[in-house]
Image (tube, rainbow, N blue to C red; front, side, top):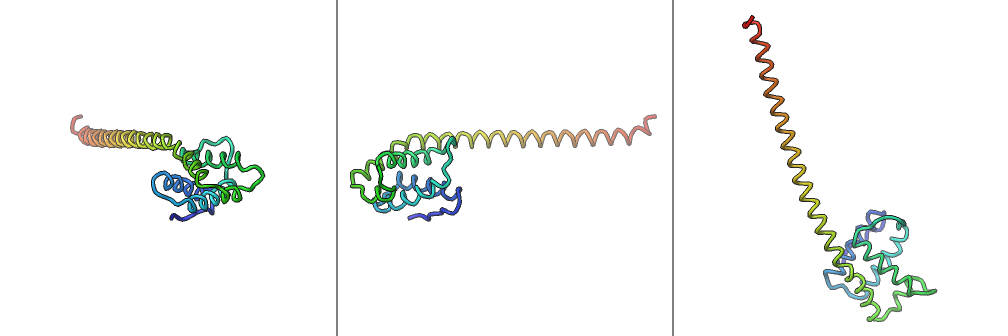
Length: 153
């Protein structure tokens, strides 16, 4: 389905983002959903930090794992997941789908910031070019004036 890059924190976060994206936008089997959820949970726990603001897709994943943790009792995460019924798996998927609007809003916000940054960078370049052009004109005028000074006096 997609590669699991679980070697470092960036790889885990990117893989979780891809997992959530695939779950929300493509048909993924229940077995693949449980398999990936279990592996990503174990990898994420190694890097999870309290007090950080995660992206919306990661917050959706965290919501699913927190729900599982609240329901599993004394079972391990993997044991609980393997014993889930189809209805319980669909409930986990609904938690992800409940975050779809937040993910969409974050994508729209990113696109707006990207456009704003593009316009600001373009204005900065134009200002720098105009400033450089003005400096060139002044330098030419000054050098001409110095050359003509001996003739004027």
